[in-house]
Image 1 (cartoon, one colour):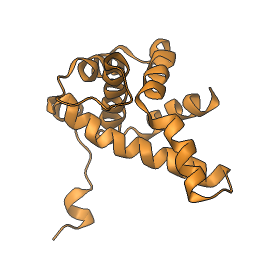
Image 2: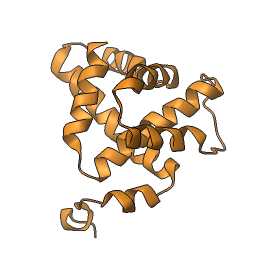
Image 3: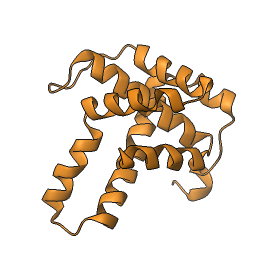
Image 4: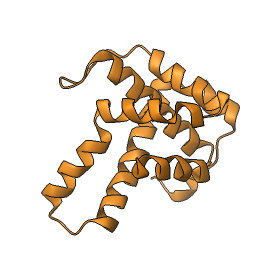
Length: 135
């Protein structure tokens, strides 16, 4: 049985970096989705269908690729290295509505969010998120 005690821990940076970039992107995708959904719920009083339509604008590969390009000068060297690892990761799938370049940069973005989440740098996630939603 899973309990909070079993899953709530902070990873050391070196431990998190040992995960594959696709593993980082896996958790980063979920974290980013929750942030977007929370933001939309707090700021829009619309149907769930309309919330979904708005969320897609933030989470589709093209949007995430644009986001990471807009953040490039704001990221630290370490953060950009995580993005590049994610971007260069070999995935066996590409969504039908995304081109390969956008998909790879989106994977890099999600890897960065996953990395920051695992090392418990939520303050940095929120800084980046503020920049994202203010675009």
